[in-house]
Image (cartoon, rainbow, N blue to C red; front, side, top):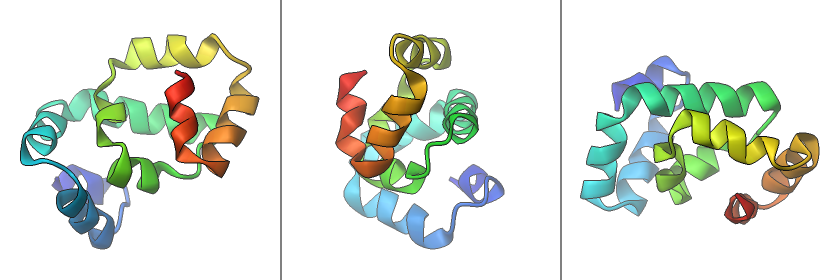
Length: 95
């Protein structure tokens, strides 16, 4: 998961990802590196501030195909949804 370090995520976050997630999910996450990076970039661009928490507790969220993730956000008022996610990461369930 060195690519997360390149995206400026602290080592502590990577340790927590490993502690809170199943090895098979982490394997899929690593294998989907390109898609994961696109999703992280998209979330940063729209103003999601809790990406670290999502990585730790909702790792499967980053496995969603990037184009599908974008379409899912576009089905809502993006700024409102981002605000909800920043307040409570479980708001991603709306997608």
